[in-house]
Image (cartoon, rainbow, N blue to C red; front, side, top):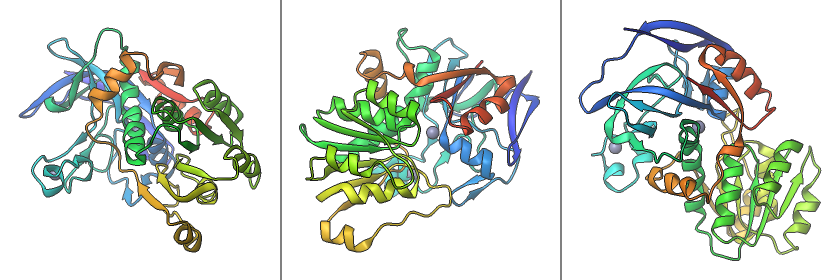
Length: 333
Ligand SMILES: [Zn+2]
Ligand SMILES: [Zn+2]
């Protein structure tokens, strides 16, 4: 049996292929893919033919935010990371730090922008009827947001910053509101994202620009500083702003992925403030919680999906997403 897939051949070069449907290996199920979200990390692959220290080595199928239907008719959200389950880090409860992790749509492993994929049964999470396949695909970025907020160890009544309001930032805004933050300051360079942050629960949503907007952020923090800042832009300016406004003894959680693979901060500022700095590595154990949060209506993933394209128009979808026009761009099959 043949299927359609979309492979990245080089910078900006996505091509449609016809290829055999994969045969599930041991412990795997064949999944008919129904919805795939385009992630900021996919856009790094698309526009740089790599991400961080990983480079494109063969025509790669991207896509790691997805949901589909198994051969036996189950509607499932799919966790894209396959951890080994027996290394030191897996055994200590950190599968996201697994030494031999395999991730859909990364490095040597093809992802979900194809009609079928074979994936580990233990990574398939059945969804309640109230969740659509598109909702299911959103559980992956929601998982990253949940894990990020877990690392922030929030207390009710805190002042929290969310710098960068793409889909992950907007999910973090909702999560910190849910956790009882009483002052949420969200920033972005784009007006439509600032608007979305406001409507999804930010108390202060600030449009920032090159060197502007920081005064408004400081004022919103009432001079005292922010308890925890989530940097979800992957931009040095946002990192700088985070270290500027975080309070002494506060936390900076770095969620964003910088384009040039470098992040810097002023060591003197960080030391004098006695800051805790954490890096977010994907997520762990988040799918059941993400499913509950969405099905109980506590987190809105649906309004983040602004564009939908069929698989055949994946290249167009990526170009639109790269222009940062909407929020989440979805491929539906
Ligand atoms: Zn992603
Ligand atoms: Zn492992």
